[in-house]
Length: 389
Image (cartoon, rainbow, N blue to C red; front, side, top):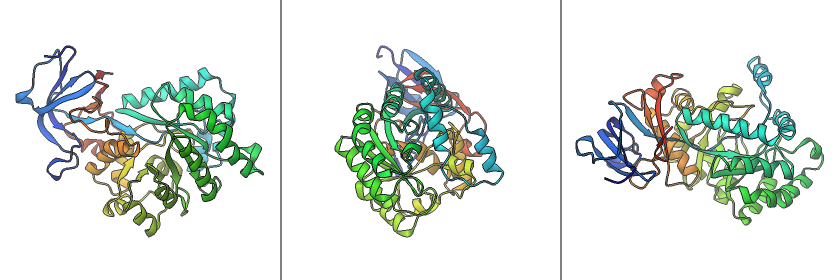
């Protein structure tokens, strides 16, 4: 018996994501799981469970890897509820409201921003999200982008520099000058706090040439590549991301056959964000088309104050099943192992020996209930790094 060990037993359904026997979820029945030093040390039949210092009785419930939310914008100030109400009354979403949040974020104190990130991170954890990526992008000055990432780094190791979110108002007539600043002093100030760089490659934001230049500079500075692509309409973003070897292209709402073929022949993950379509009354991505083509798909919340103000991965799982033609198993895999793939992480999104002991115990007997019972708080308990939260 190892000091500090924890046994979770009487698991009715254990989702491991080990892919054994052709089942991507790697489901084991009547299982147990041993945690030592914050990692999964053993899994197997409950009847053969080893002794441990402490024990959690799952009572026949389902146990899943913690959700991996690979796309979130948590460093911001202000509220855009009125904008949401206007969209529900028929106004289209254009992305222009981002500048409203930029103004509020610049005016906020470090303490206010830190409190918002902390509140949303706690919301996510209560709903089973144990790993989250956090982007900057609402400061859009050298100092504000650096402080956004510095604050984000207090809550996650997956921080993303998104200075290329939109061109701020003061550079509206000088987009080339702004791109030069993003690639120069802004990147230099942000890179020490970032693992990734991202660009909103979309009409009204940054074109392919600007996106390519910014991503190349980020890569030269040692940052991994991510890309917002093809949300508002067809465009070059998806194929640019694949060409550059981006870990993930996100949104993927409007895809051509060439886009799907490019993704299918690459290691780039298509991260789908159904909360954005829900909150903007836009068409949902066709996840079935991507999956049938062999594309690796992730699900994420896109949590932000404008176009997807949800912190709930279970909600996104339910939307993916109902609106994007994913099976419950595909949606759960995309919200766990898929998110890990989008972050190029092998230590999370699975429950196998050596993985981080991030897991959720449902108040339900099966992963099916996440889509079967939408809106119901089914997360009974969360372990993060092997510690009950």
